[in-house]
Length: 312
Image 1 (cartoon, rainbow, N blue to C red):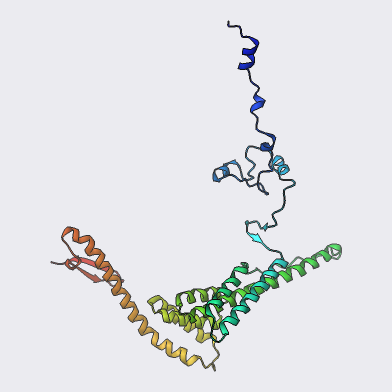
Image 2: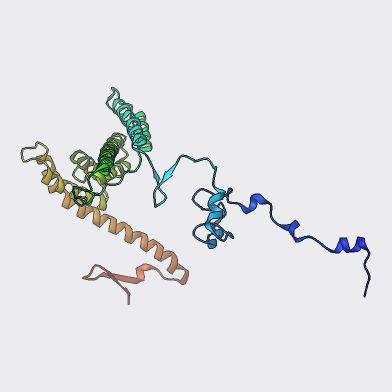
């Protein structure tokens, strides 16, 4: 047996507590509020609460005490929510920007780029307000149950009504701004963008007559097979929405009468262009083997497909 001196014993031995993590690392203050860790995706295996190696949630919750609130509320899905006062302020800002855009658009001469920027800024200011479902009727309460709680419910109902009204205003403003932006794009001869903007407005109101007319006209200008077909659908819908005495009906009816022939012509043109591109691609591949597409015959079948046969 080897005898160790006192100095050698001190050099060999060690205190395991010296390797423990510092106290700040064992608390939860470095984690986000709500228990989600600041680590990467690999940390998700630690559990839904994000408490890592902690054995209970109390340690993690205690670690978040005293942290400043970042001021952003989220719903159950993690989406940012706004108070009624915040929504009202955002709506006021967007409405002012929309009116500024209207002034640019109606100016003589028109300031179309300035109008476009104002409308886009208005859209940036508007939060996304989905259609609010109609709440189910509350069960009737007995006379004994209607006391102080009824006062609280009345106040909450007023708050809900105010919020619903503000959200309705946001949806109406969003619809109008998209429609106005579509008009700007039409004036700028940017018809693809006009169709996209009008489609956004029609998501809020599929029977928005002015915007339906705008989108149909823009699709006519684009002139593709799909665009002309979409214009035909919009004009057909417009005839069901416009009053019988509307002066716009005759022009729409004339356009509808001319669209089928234009659609057929454009369809054949696009089909020929597609076949020409396919032939060019085929020649590029077959040419490596001393072949070409001219050596094959393509017959259209009843179902709309094509049958490719080698020419004798």
